[in-house]
Image 1: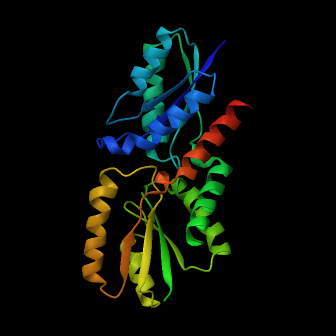
Image 2: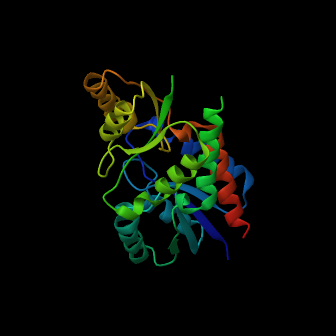
Image 3: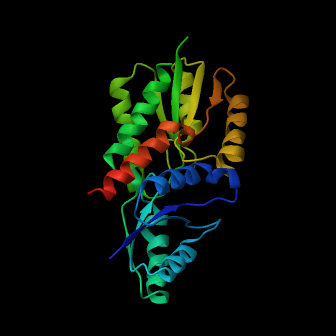
Length: 122
Length: 122
């Protein structure tokens, strides 16, 4: 059974804010076979609700939700779990799993260290 | 003249949220000679104001402010520039330069791609 991956970003009213997330989605979509969608928690579209409805329409029954957040605060401990619970009620045909934020990955901190160190060496 | 580096994170009321930023500051402080401080835009301390006052006390006259944000939205286009303008008025002995967010760095997107791809290969 195909499992989709949803990249969940915070969202912003500023359209320029979305550029790095769009770049990420484009790069990954070219390189991965897994169905992959970018969704926003709030303030811009597509929303998580829209993306889940879309995935259900194409027959996806499982999706991991990977938060593109530095860390888990109130949004990831309260708001997003509530959204996912509501989605489970509204879209019972698709099982959603909320993953830890990408900032929890040791390689993420390593990358930040490398970027900051390369900067100060310039 | 020594230039300091201020890592500016958003901030959260959730103390667990700060863990990756603390890890980053600790790692960098062990490896860099540049005076380095972590500051939060809002909701937790040390604030940017506290950090700038502290750096001025130890004789720093220039500091770069590197936002640990995925992208520049309202916070980095409006709120933080206003904070920095107010700081220039209050602490005229230290010159602050607001840099582009770390998410604008191509290596940042590359790192996200690698983390996501290594995950789906597992």
